Length: 184
Image 1: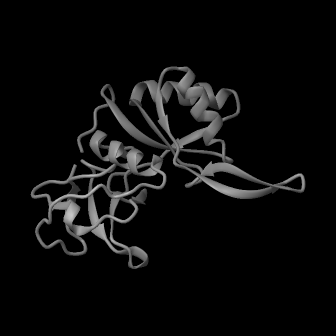
Image 2 (image 1 turned 45 degrees about the vertical axis):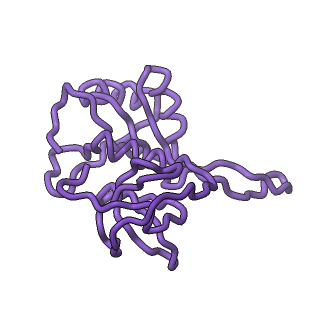
Image 3 (image 1 turned 120 degrees about the vertical axis):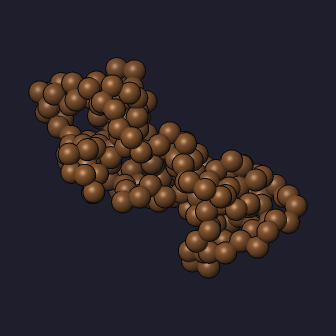
């Protein structure tokens, strides 16, 4: 994906010391769009078992902004004791990781879903593991990703290369269609 420091993109930043939620709160108060994938987990707090939400990936925060604005916020946050680093591209270390809007929208939609049911559709072509597909019906309609079978369950994986992957719940092959061409 092309990178321009004045255009709005999704960036991946890495806050120090598990401060992603505090930095998210600060950046959202400045009008920036942020996302931290969360999950519920059972914890013992003061002798009581409680269900709490915690980040799925610690020290990762996705932010939609332009690079110059985010660099300015980095200096502000550093001054108040909440530093963060830009995650850099593995092929070009001088460039931050930039995530396409469509890919990030798919990732957010899958991460924010809870237990869903398949709504049904007509049978499609024969889909194989590793094919790039689009979900045609149900709550994940429109999401594109790779067809996979982790834990022997058929699902679609939305992959942000070298960063993270999110799996849908069970998706039957009949609800999928092959996508030709470039991946978004």
